[in-house]
Image 1 (tube, one colour):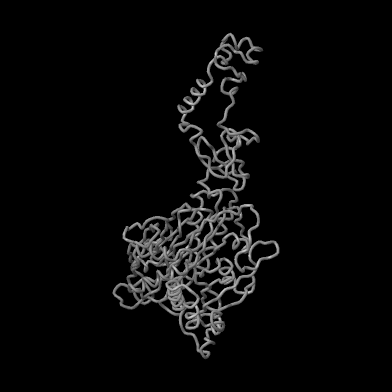
Image 2: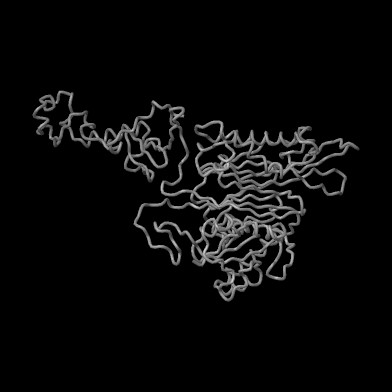
Length: 564
């Protein structure tokens, strides 16, 4: 931290700190002499000492010499870049003594150091921060996930998405409003049970992932709420590490969990930084704008980089299970749970934490189970490029690709899609978009019109196909998503109303699919608070003529097409 007294108090009307008047350059005489040495200006006539060259004034020498001498002295002191070559960050205004400020974001910038600072009112000091978001842009994140399960009743692979962690913390009365926004938490948990050496029986289902998914944020939020001042990377890493330890201890305190555990990949987003904490064999990738890293993809417009390494170090220990001494084996050395192997000192819950500073070139952050490692980086780049802005469709496509390569067990994929949007600029009101109803103030649409394709699954609120003779629906959620993914691909390959109508009539399980002609699937004009929140959010965010991502509600999974 920089002490408060070391920063000058910004003064209004000081002008650009690098602009010095002639009087400042020549010692304060205010001379406007021509450099002839005669001191012919009015100041020179009133100051005989300046005309006689007594050594106390310099009005008789050319100003350019002293300017050059000053610039040379500054370069020797380490300020190598001339003032005119230093680019002032966009959105920052000059204050005084080389300081600039962006009032809207509460960020200061120092020209000679070219560093950014914020002010901590509690400590009355300034602290350095990394480069803030572009002054004219803000980061918006769209996150979704998709899973397939080995067992019908036990979900060993779980995902958690808290899109607004500040709002969730406020609901729990654990405020974290002091942290930069957006704040979010998203995670993948992959359950496991240690195998028994010499046994061919498949380990039973794990319940650890379910417990950690429900309780981790309860351990993390109080730690983030404790300190209201600025949080640096070290402090955030320490809070995450302690939350891992607390949640693990809480799980191990439960009875009958001696051989139950899970791997975890948890992302805590604070402002434009993503802290990726992981234990076990899950994988995290970051996708950026640019050519394919492999150089073999022709359709990819992004480059995928792996962020984490897997903790795949097999361990084993002799354990008394009550009837005999067996040797338990596990494929990782970091995990939640696994009490017996932790007691032997072979497994730990201490995570590795990586900090990623998000930039406008970043497209998305992808988390996957270890079982999806069979999907090559080239395939990931192509799928993420094709499904940009549709994280759930992208995750479903990745799972489908893994299944074609032999995936049979549980797996999960989570995608956080990044979009940098321009901040609103005060401008004259624009006419509304085509056919969109607007309120009287001419602002955002209060009604939109969409068509939909609905596919139900056995876990939805009403798993009955009322369109086709009240048949019970037995498909899984993953199978319903696959149907919509195939429908989306078909519509994209043959754009137009007719293909949407055909698919709607053939697969949709909503009564609106029975409407005639191009009205099949038409939901009519939709007002806010009329439909499920997920449907409302997706519908009002869609531009006219665009298809949505896969949207889940209690009725099933939906594909929306905004028509007005």
